[in-house]
Length: 399
Image 1 (cartoon, rainbow, N blue to C red):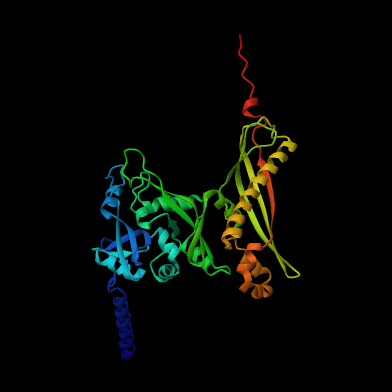
Image 2 (cartoon, rainbow, N blue to C red; image 1 turned 135 degrees about the vertical axis):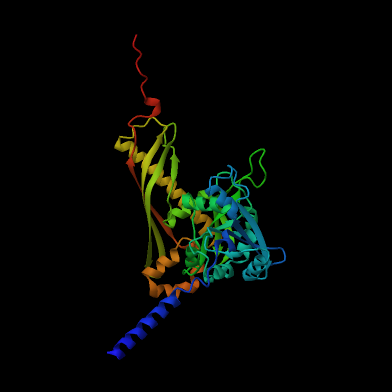
């Protein structure tokens, strides 16, 4: 009996010791006031061929003042921008850390901006570092800037708290291209090994404002062959690219119907694109099938859009406009740049894996001359009112 009590006492003692070991405190804790929260990253290439790493860091005292009800309407001073230079991005971060009193924390990074020179030199090494770092977010939005990335992060936008937040909001609006670190890495490992990234440039400041008191905006797309930027297209061609890649989220199309005065504007509700590769007797062909549903949001003509005949005329013009956008981007990127950023290589690989392995070494020669057929279908879901603004009868005036 005594032995049993002694054994129970010993087990209880060991159990208590184990609990004390778990309650030893946060020995590896990191206080918030010891960290520099990075909101945005800019990567540039200097004239000497070195890497310049620029970070936009949140200013805690300003953020705290706003949370407590302090601070004014201006966002100037809510972030600071600091840079470091090195042979690699790792060296640049090390130099940058030496100039800060707090340890850099990358878990809140919203955007990553590559300067134009850095993009043309190659971004594979930088992406590799960002993917390996345990704190960086692979869902951060990626951009290419006209000029330097540092100049973009230094902006003080009026309606946003920081330049990084302004870029993030632009990406989330999905008016043009949106790409994350994860998606960029996936494109780089695709069959064609090509990348498309949104390009940003700086709006001219309003009269009376400082040069940095303005906003960046997305104006086109950077085209990469492997990891090097080789060209760019404007926003008009970008929308055609998004239609082919099945990434179009927002679109307004204005057309004129032959024989009618005025214009009609439609708003896209949803769209779906299917790539249909075909291989017959050693010949390759791609058919792009697009089905889009639209609402008519403006009728500047005298057409009655409740008429099936008139709706058919409008649909034909909308299909023609979408086809023209897609054909123009095909001519620019397929015929002139000769770069497959449309996903054709992956589509052929998925449908014809055995034939693709024989064709892959010759894909760069085959792609520019690949026949592409467009099959566009527009469905008008809501034509709107059954009369045009010109046809609205004036109210009768009682005498």
